[in-house]
Image 1 (cartoon, rainbow, N blue to C red):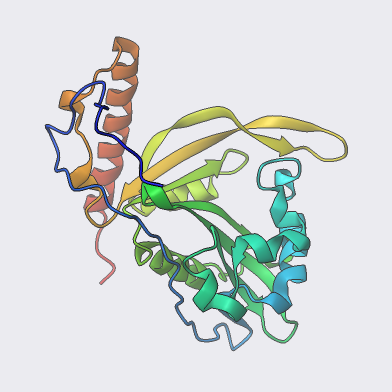
Image 2 (image 1 turned 90 degrees about the vertical axis):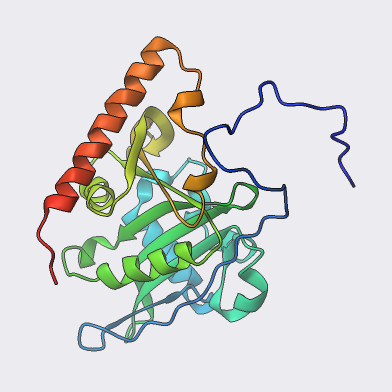
Length: 259
C-alpha cells in the first residue's frame, strides 16, 4: 500500500538547525562478531543459540527476576524465544527480522549462560535500545562482562542505527556508572516507568534513568534547542541536563589517557 501524503503538511516546518534527507526505507540488521574464549578458556561471548534457550530463560529468572509481570517478562519463558530473538542457528534469516539480539557469556564446560545483554531495535526510528545487561548472582565481580560489553557495543554500532538509548535501574548505580564513563548523555529520570516484581506476590513501579547517544549521522539530522518550543519549566529542566552532561564530558576529557 502506498500512503498518499500530498494533502498533508507538518504542524510547523522544522529542521532549520539541522540537515534533512529524503524519506527512505530504514533497516537495522544484527551483525555477528566472534569472540575467543577468555579467563583461561572458561568463558566465551556468542550470540544465543537454540541449545542455550532453556539456560538463558533460567538465567534471567535468577539474574533479573524483577521483570516478572512486566513487558519484558518473555525473557523468563523459553517458549517465547524462537519467535522474538535472533539465534545463532538461524542467524542469516534472523539478523534482519528479529527485534531482539541477545549476546551471552557461556561457561563452556557447563554449556550455561552466566551473563547476557539484550538489544532491541526500533527499525523505522533507526534506534537500538540497550535493554538489559545482567550477570548470574554466582558470577558477579569476576570480570566476565568486559568482553560481553565490547561485543554488544560492536553489534549496536554496526547495526545501521543512528540513535542509541538505554535505561538504568535505580536499585544500584552500576549501569548508570557505565553510561556516565562511556560517553552517554543523561536524557532524564522516569519515576514509575516500569512495573517491577518485588518478590512473593508483590509488584511496584520502579524508577529508571534514561541515557542516549548518537552514532553515524544521527546528530547531524537532529533539531537543535534554538528552534524548539519549550515551556519555561521544561526549558529549565533541559538546561539542567545540559549542565550535567557538559560536566560529565569535561571530567572525561580531563582524565589521563590509559595509552
